Amino acid sequence: MPLKLTGSSGSGKTTLAFALADRLGGAVVQDFGEVGVPDPPVPAHWGNRP
Image 1 (cartoon, rainbow, N blue to C red):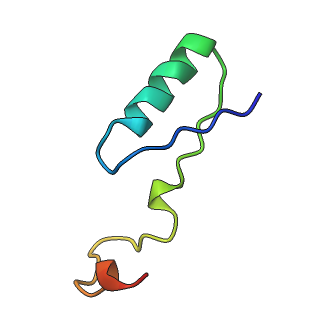
Image 2: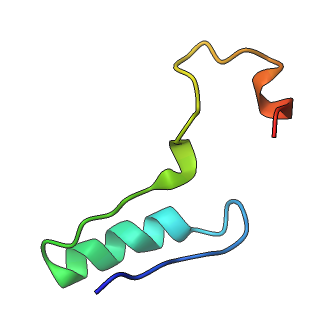
Image 3: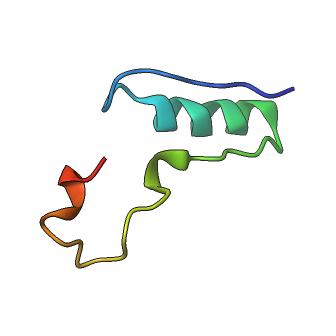
């Protein structure tokens, strides 16, 4: 059963997702918050791109 968590930046979505995964036993968390983020060092202008 897919479950989607949404909310504001910094509201605890990822923390909640991993807590739920622990409770559900064997659930997979796919965190898309880091998709497309370059490896460090992150260029200063990168965050300004849409």
